[in-house]
Length: 114
Length: 117
Image (cartoon, rainbow over all chains, first blue to last red; front, side, top):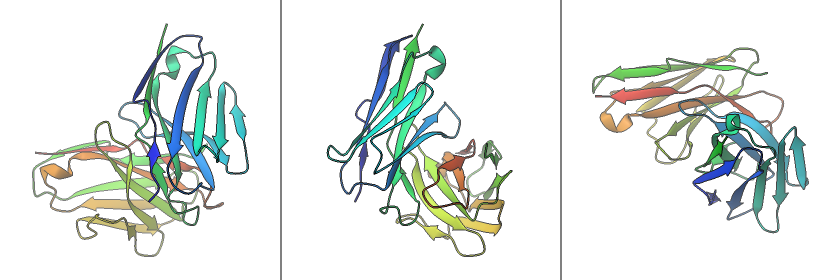
């Protein structure tokens, strides 16, 4: 079955630096991959979706890449700010895109220090 | 943007009580809603997929008689935890997907923290 690994449980960086988070999957390449932000005690908030035929997607200070050869997605936050501190979740379709069900990684907790 | 409201946000009750959680899509119609459970420092685990007007589809290992799901309208799905026990204590989160395609992002509620004493 498909598995997702977000290698770093926690990432601490200095304000202004670029944060890079990694998401690896183990089985088939998904039709799309999504990134969400989750704050403590809150539900996830959608950030970006990248499809299998897209190499890169950008939204303001966020950038996502998708490498189906490496079975990996990278999530970048440039010019990071303390307000970016949160847990970031990677998610992909569980059944090859046929039903829209998502499976999530455990997340990476990002802390941006002023 | 799409808004999903979940109620209540926090419940504490005695063992054996049944608890109902509501999930509403406020500004769009959701033919499909999802229910997740999240334990501390763990990922969201899909419990079931709720389809308007039909029976929910449960993931392997989730007891459908324990976790009753009703999706009676295009804007409301409910999850009832029947005869809850301490091991059911968790963070329950619902999501809804706009009916524009299965590859669209899901919009999440803010979760319900359930504590069974």
